[in-house]
Image (cartoon, rainbow, N blue to C red; front, side, top):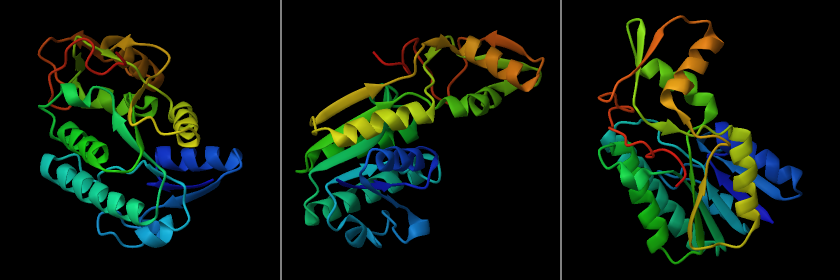
Length: 230
């Protein structure tokens, strides 16, 4: 099959492309660096010509509320139009586990808006909701650091290595669309406290990890299971 991966030069997208190529598919990475811009629509029809499957692994360049919403809505609308014109048989959209349960996050509201556009379209689809990338746990820990303390929410997180996620996304792309949502998470649900402790140990840091019921995840309050696969 010919499978076009939007965001195919990114951390996840590049791994999806390689996994699909290894599986014998014609996997095409599409991103602004290859002349394909989903926000403006530039190059989309050319990239999708003859394709069977579209995988959207793109991400907004800004996590701020309005720019994220503008990116995901404009990009998704352009992708849907181009996919219809190209007779794409399966639209695979990457999303985030629990996005519809955390409306205080503007970024996650944008992901929900993206999902709704895909669901309301006429193209057969699969939405893949994933847990947080394991490669980002150090950055998450840094975001929770206040002086010599790391103040973490009393919640769980389920990191997944991007290669493991890419393998799963490739399997979804190879399969028939389900017109629904697939949740994919890492092998273990751990506390933010454990995640931060392991991150600090890797970096040789001696900061203290404090469980703080008022701590937020990039400004968003969490319940215990907000970020893990149900």
